[in-house]
Amino acid sequence: REAALIGDMRMLHVDSTTKTVRPRSNADYALRLCCWLNSQERELFSRPFEGKEEDESARKFEHFLPLMGDVLESGSSYPIAGAQYKRGMRELVKGEEERLVVMRDVKSLHRFQRTNVDSGEVEYDAEDAADNAGVDDMGYSAVEKWPDLGVVVVTAKHPPHYYALFSLAKGSDAVVTMYPGNRYEIEYRYTGTVDLQSRPTWPRLNLARLAKVLNARERPGESPPDVLIMPRGRRPSSAPPPPLQ
Image (cartoon, rainbow, N blue to C red):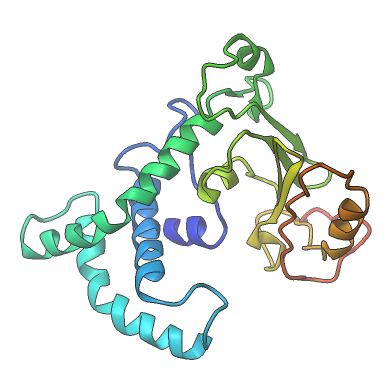
């Protein structure tokens, strides 16, 4: 379940106290599993949305299913040392490089996040960030939430790993990331294409018009804005869905 939340919904649980993924937690094991799957898909199969999906899916099942038991055993809370554990660990380490990148970016992104003692909401501590300006080599400088629109806005110097970036989007459906050089990314979570039962969600909007407007307003000599256009999901509406009863 935790791996599905990370892989599909981009819901990586970050501990609010340690500002990282707690070691040996369900989120830690799930992240290792997701990074292993990603590394093997990149190495052995075509990229997403390329090739014939039916054939690729069949090949993936044939490859991953025989390995899954060993991998799950090696990543469990109480692994049994033995051949199965060793086989699983040999597989899991293939995703370690990506996992370390995720952990690095989580630490940078969540560095100045604080929990509001009154509301319980995680908020960006601008004063703390200002006091420590220049300390963070990754350069993540601001996180702003627009709950009425289901949007999180992140200002950063470098693109972080998407698992780390979307860990800031709890309760939101879209992430706007702003980089130096007039570069922007607008990314939707999968929450906008499924019937999520835990909270109301915004549908995905077709961003082609937005890209056209940004390009039209581009000044000569400036770097063009990078707009990631995701496929349209549910029909857009002028207002957010009503709260669940």
